[in-house]
Image (cartoon, rainbow, N blue to C red; front, side, top):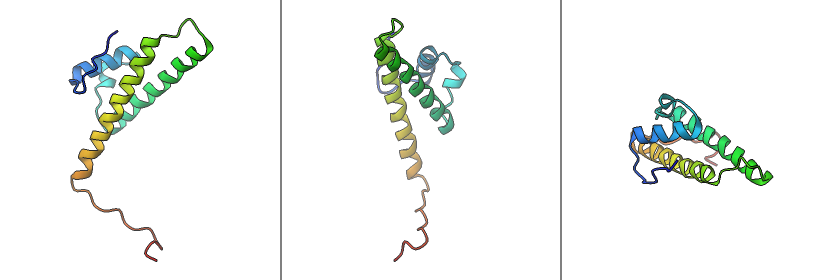
Length: 104
């Protein structure tokens, strides 16, 4: 499975790639909320850990292309989360209240 490595992926392409790579439903991959993205990141990290363990043990099940695809998708999801937080930080963000005793 060749991944679309362009930075700007359309939502259907992202959903299809994640569903194929992780074995999840496209509806689950389509959730672009914070909790949905964090769940996808957690699944990607778990799948990457399994693939790393297979590689280290010398298992014949290890697939370097799958490992690289997992790393690529994880990086893209982290970038999407960074954009999500960057967009949210600019909209009506208020300064955090000071902690008690921090004014000294």
